[in-house]
Image 1: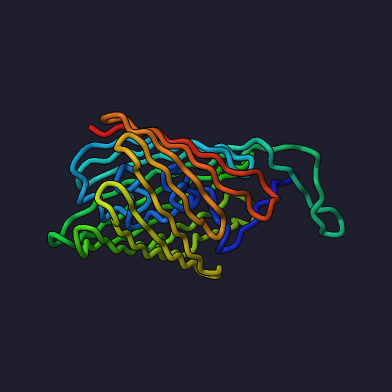
Image 2: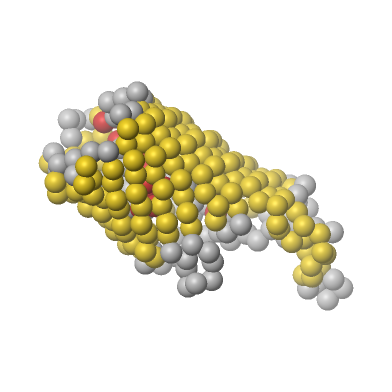
Length: 281
């Protein structure tokens, strides 16, 4: 009896490429040049060099019947994070005499973990670079796999109101080898994200866009906008891979809370809701 593990160079450790950031979701996941809190560990470590305070962000969501929970912490020039994903509903399979996979009727659990460690440094007043090292582990029933990888990033503040950025995820690609009899190996694909952020109205209206290119997958464009009608509140809207996203936030001194909604894909899955809470100090 075995647990089926499907491996391709585009689906490996998919949970690690899923963001549960509510504020970024409201912006259509166009956060490469725009993010400015502890989630920079995930979105763009180069901008950690611009951070002027300490920040803590907690996030949670349920998608594809999997619960994702993340915590990120950052300070000027450095950051760290941890993501945990879990589901209990994977169907076990085994191959019959005709070498065809058939369900066993047993249900297995899945869990995934990612540890992040990031740093960013300013090379000039306008240009910064950064890296994020990550450790990934997946567990399915009695099988597991783990690997390490590296993401590289750059950010350029062209003007006080315009930032451009580039992130190369998995420039050192994690390769996960499963402890199965055939020692299945999975390699995460190289993903390039280029971003542009424009502050149309200072501390009130921001526009952002990301162009995402991944090996063996169609490129996609994410766009979003966030508007602060008053300093204590925000509303946002965007398109994430063609899907409508909406968000809102509340900001009380050093505390912030965000909630977002994303339309389901092709009406096959439920709509996604994400919740984040953050503290700056």
